[in-house]
Amino acid sequence: VKTYLTQSISNTEIPHLELYASNRNETEPRLSFDIVIPTLGRKDVLKQTLEDLAHQSHVPECVIIIEQNPNIASESELDYLHNGNWPFQIKHTFTNQTGACNARNLALNQMEADWVFLADDDLRIPQDFLRSANAFIQNEKPQAFTVSCLQIGEVEQEQTIIQWPAFGSG
Image (cartoon, rainbow, N blue to C red; front, side, top):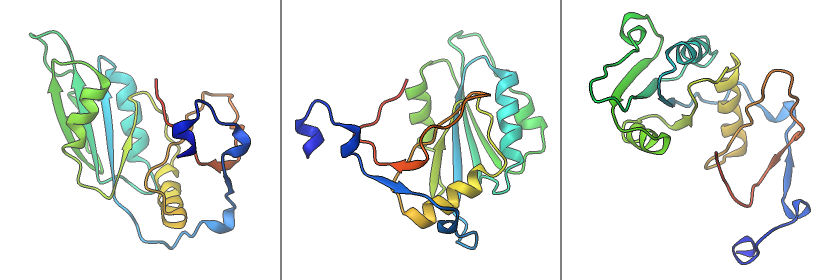
């Protein structure tokens, strides 16, 4: 309620929770994950992201791809979705309506897993990402969470879990 009535809040008022390696229990039950990826004209980078997902130590159940192209006469460019041998189900929707929010909403209507990961089509995803997410969810019991996506050479500055007072994107 405090953040609702206050235009800004000091970082010192945001609670932090230390995350130690001993908090992560590798024997926790395996949660299911669906991955949502909107894409528009980025065939090669999307394939790289799918290959990263295929090599996860905790493979997602399904990857839901919303391919967008505003050209009414266009067709899908993503032949490798159906020609490849992927270790997860792929649900592919092609639409001429563009917009990441619309694409994510189309995808969310198709999800069936315990958790959904809203990804961009150009992410490089470490092999243990979903295994770590599973352990984090089991131990911390969040209803939702965000992760930082760092560029090569960037170093994560925040070493604790932060309860954000608000969420924004873009």
